[in-house]
Length: 637
Image (cartoon, rainbow, N blue to C red; front, side, top):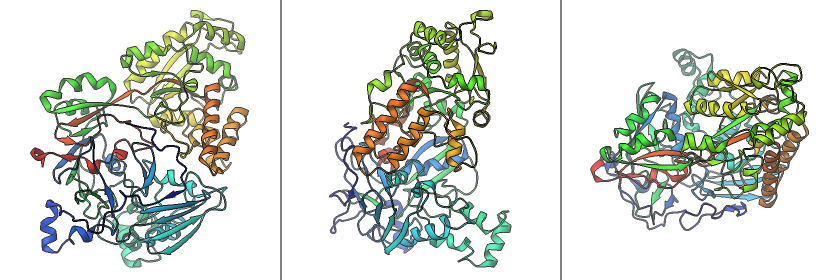
């Protein structure tokens, strides 16, 4: 598989390729499970359900055209995981494929001028899952009546739609064409539409208007407010308007499957969207599978349930440590265990809190020599061998080899195990005095005891920290482990109380120049090594602390340059400069990456690639491999 094919192409215009629109004389095949509804008149025939120019999917090579029918079973660990159907379904205005190229999907085409003028062309005749037309009105309604309505969106439009604090000019050119124009480039706009959790710039206006004070019947709205126990029409509207959660079975969608299960339960069934916009070369409307069933299970039981054949497609709730158990059940339960490398910048990484409240700890964590010393005192080989049988990659938190921006020097820099180098750096800082058990002393005489906090969700993190404590103790650093919950861990970090946290690296570990490098700069509070700087940026200076460290400010300056860039060459160089700073500064101490994620695939399920990358962004885990193309053989149809 050529992962880098087409990655560096400039994004100027997305036209309609030969495979992007169905031919006028295409003979469509009616979906068997919908035939009775078509014959009764409850549904129009498939030729009328598809857009005039549907997305034509040509399956060849390892991917073969399939047959309609059957139910794909999967396990989820909480009811809110219904949202995974929006992630895996991955119907996006524009989306990424396995080659990481960004192409039109729901849209027929996109015209881009100067990286600041975006003209979006919809597919004529495209419909929502309830059969209502999907048109420019759905974009206008969202922009004028939702994003710019103070009651529904108190903070205004999403940050991704603001350039230098200013929103775009929005225009409806006709029923199937809208345009967004910014005064300066907005290079991250298209990427924001393609994420696992995308920025939705449209909404089903025909459905939501009934709950909007400007359109709906006041008496009906008042009754619905009372029935749903909410404070007013805005809260009512927002409750029903959530295309990502997939928990409102009445909310129309553009995804391949539609939720048919009301309320909170232990099993959710998603039925095919009869108006889905993709079709294969044989004239079969996608998705192939009639249904997807999500069964809620205790996360601790997922490996055993997968082992017994209770899932056709499973990754949620599975870890590398489950591989032996999973492989043991393959022949008996009729499945295969694929191993996809994790697409994050690091599977495990340490986040020293540069915004710690204690000035002694803050100054120490901000000293690059101290961060490099901790990295040099980390024996990644032992961790890899002990936890991952030596199959992970040992090095910094940076982009992965699948990314065109990967540089081995960034991955290796300061990531070699060397107690001598660690001791030399710690002595150079002035931490030469020792206390009981040979633990070094801080400048104020306290022992150098670093509390590393974890969310208590992954037992391997505890194993990791226990291994780390052994090698750190050899250089006079004592590591203490604090296990809490994700919420407590994050809140302690945000408040400046946590020393160091253990988490994964950036989600977009296989990034291209077209993807935002915002995760590399202090742009978000939930980046655990500089939460107060991120909060300051997110709140426009109303909370948090301004950046007061030159190297961090350099990252922010580069990010600002990326936001105003208008060429792939500029964006590539900015990415490389930011990655070089991270490698030099060790802001995040990466441990291992490319850890293999087990994927359980039933022998009856086809078109799931044996080799893939398990990436949240870009790609939505299974999303960029298009589960609507997965099909079940005759025995399961």
